[in-house]
Image 1 (cartoon, helix red, strand yellow):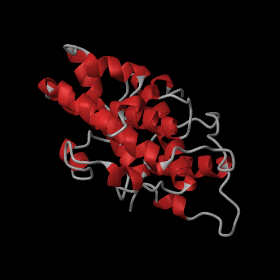
Image 2: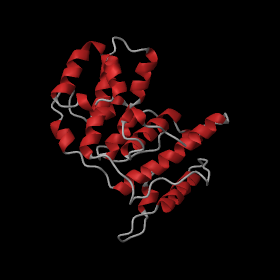
Image 3: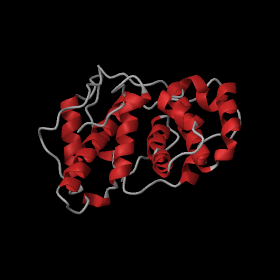
Length: 230
């Protein structure tokens, strides 16, 4: 059973699930997994109010993150990568902070680590455009090969990947958003109290997923401005 199966038992008809219902379903799942939560953690967005990025925006963001990760490992390809992004109208979508990294002569060790951890954000974004079937509990870092298998070959024309990207229904995106929000509280609370991580959660994986889903749902307009409040 996937972690989102519990959410599939929702009211039938034309009425969207409310944020309160979603919170209760998430808490039921967390309880079954012995993951701590607090009742007074706020609700996430109502389905009627939420804004979600388009499939094209998501696909473009995935490619920008992937090519930055590639460049962090193969810095000699800097010129080729930037030219590729410019050729396919992606360079203007690169955030200001990312442009500094793309153009930097040499990344620091910490910058390279931070870039590679973005693979977890990429995985959630791939899930959001239905390139990943099931979003499992975030307990370990995803293999890069799993990501690359769902993308066009490096330096291949990304037009079809971008234009055919289809976003999951809002209710599924909000289920993921509510869950990762409460998982992030659990990992932060556990860390602050020096306790073993519940359900073998990986705190960094949770944080990257939270960042990605907050961008998906316009927690801020720009990628660089996203926060992961809990």
